Length: 327
Image (cartoon, rainbow, N blue to C red; front, side, top):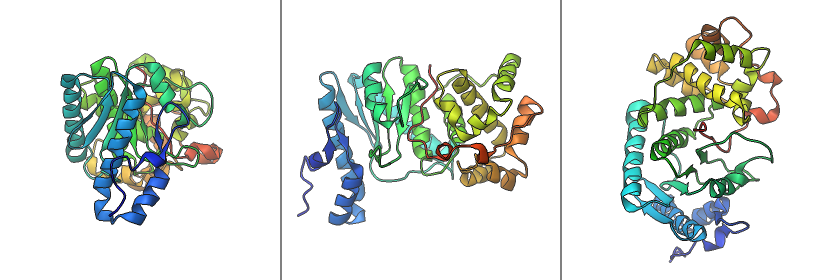
């Protein structure tokens, strides 16, 4: 009999801070040695469930675990509220996979989608702190998808964290992070990943449409001119706690809207796009033009094309988290 009794993941839970953090690389190896792949989905469900229970215990009174067909939540909500969030999450998942991004979004890995919803901002940032690459100032967020395994941050089960509060904002964050989750198997440039997530969370959570004013375009030209556009293509713009972050989300959404007018071509572009060059090769291959031309149509003449040769090695890395726009 394989040793998968209740509590079997306890030896793999690191407790160096206030949260039980599974050592997923060790869990992966443990399961690969002891169970056929046909049993992995249920075993990862079991691991996620025990992880959620341990996290709930660490958070203390007021938190509960809840579960639906495809989701496992830890939250401070009463039953009617978490049931509504589960129903919303299930609808979003189906729509993303079947209606909004067919042939692009996909389920990957094993186990249910896991979401931790924290009551206060202090707990939220305490949980996500180990996922940041280094100390510094970062943009505020209402949610993050945390999925990449690395030697520094061995938390390899893709999951997302959210801040409780206004339920409409929470639903936006939930939809946004779920898009990231279902795109995480693709090596997308951050601008494309965020442009898709921001565009779709507005649809899924009935947010306001994208409206770009003349003064917005002036801000974009001032911000991204003189080489600043390279921070957009490389993903660096999302790290700044200033207007570059806000404008990066808006420009990403504008670019996605322009590229997605014909879905078959857009799907081919997304499936070919790579963060190493900001998607430039894929754009030339699919659309027959540079991404710089696309931006030029929106912002006017300028040097807008991605130039990966001027980026640092870290700029093309796989992001460990994908924060949503503040507010």
